[in-house]
Amino acid sequence: MEERYNVQFLSPAAEYIGSVPKAGQATIAAHIKYMRSGDFESVRTKQLRGSVRELIVGHHRLTYFQLDSVLYFVRGFQKKTAKTPKSEINYAEKVYKMMRGSR
Image (cartoon, helix red, strand yellow):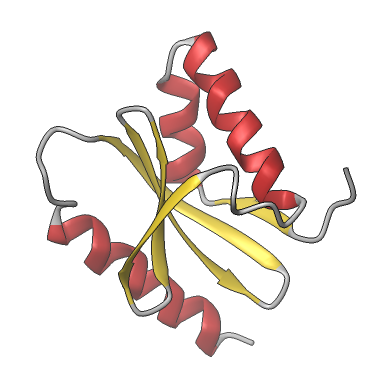
């Protein structure tokens, strides 16, 4: 599988993934591997606001955005309600604007 995207995990996303049981970590890693190769058809994602999206892996959610050929995973959380918490979307959007502005 050829890599079309680089992946960067911001520390809150890395810490979340690290807190997930090993089986969940393996599933998340498999989904990210598909995304890395440009295969977004094999994973479930959802646009949240503007460039901010979430990767859906069972009851785990990872907010992310893309800048050029890099996928930045911002934060992870467990889905407990029907809607993604506004605080998660706002945080990811703030990070996106900061990263985009530093280019």
